[in-house]
Amino acid sequence: MSESQSTSQSGDAFVVSEVAGRVGCITLNRPKALNALSLKMVRSLTQTLLAYQADPQVLAVLIRGQSKEGAFGNFCVGGDIRFFHQAALAHDDALGEFFTEEYKLNHLVHTYAKPYIAFLDGLVMGGGMGISQGASLRIVTDRTKMAMPETHIGLFPDVGGGYFLSRCPGHLGEYLALTGQVINGAQALQAGLADGLIEAQRLSVLWATLCSTPFESGQAVERWLQVQFTRQEPGLFPEKAVIDRCFSKDTPAQICAALEQESSAWAATALDSLSKASPMMLHVSLAQIRRAKNMGLADDLRMERDLVHNCFHLRDGISETVEGIRALAIDKDRNPQWQPAQIQDVKEAQWQSYFASPWSPEQHPLRDLS
Image 1 (cartoon, helix red, strand yellow):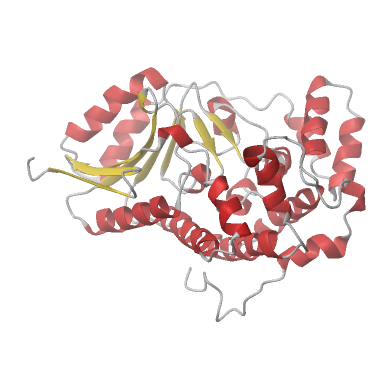
Image 2: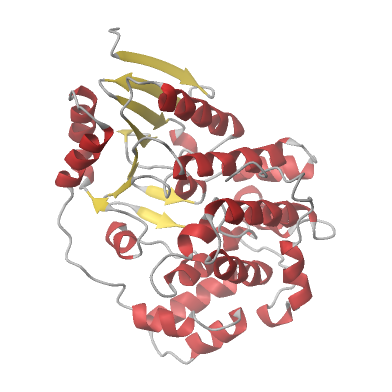
């Protein structure tokens, strides 16, 4: 192997990295789990990004996912929720380590010193958004399926979700956070969650070209890719006006009441989604998005670290998140026993308690983020 091309594998080979030409290439290689992030993968990604940041050979970093069919196909569906369930029941410290290190990785992506380019093909959800929304170029495709579906597992849109969803146009952020709605590549562009679209069938050739072109700067890498974007007619979510009208309301109950006034299939679908989500997490997520609108990234991540700790530790007995994961991924009965079971039964003091930090500022696990 030549000096300009070296390869290394780590994280149980679930993260494959190589320097090819003048770019650092990262492939998430856990296709059977749709590239769900483990703690080892988070650590491997962090180590790789820090190494590439310090390597003068590397002008820019590319990241993609691997599917069962080969390169691309799916990016990342988020964190390994089966691990969350197991670690929570076992009171394993690795659960807290996962979220602390994942959020530090999210911060590193947002503040990265070189162009970081994410190819968001296929499924992009949860933690996959966390390692891509801070990218200098977020490239979606004609088969992108993007979502933050955490309220349906008794969680909230974390990994910086408060920061990037609160900056979507109008009230799209609240809509995506509460319903977990899946959007396509064109909608991601309209929501400000992507920078350009390239057809999936073109990705392999583009990736190979990036790895073999003697670029003179990281900016040249970005410029070359931007020329490849498929022109999109400017547009909006067809329901954007209704979204803004309904999801601007003060509480989840008022949002549901507003949706009930809309006699459309879209509103019925949104209501159905809200009816399946954790009532507690609908309140928490709405407050999270609105508080984060006036926060910088580091403060938002600190708030989310407090929230995720409380999601696993605050409730007596089985936590809302453990119950949500059980219903979806463990027993697969899709019948979570939310507490409280109805949106209107959630007391303000209950959801407000999720925002109380268990740490002093000096002891906070993300105190060093700036």
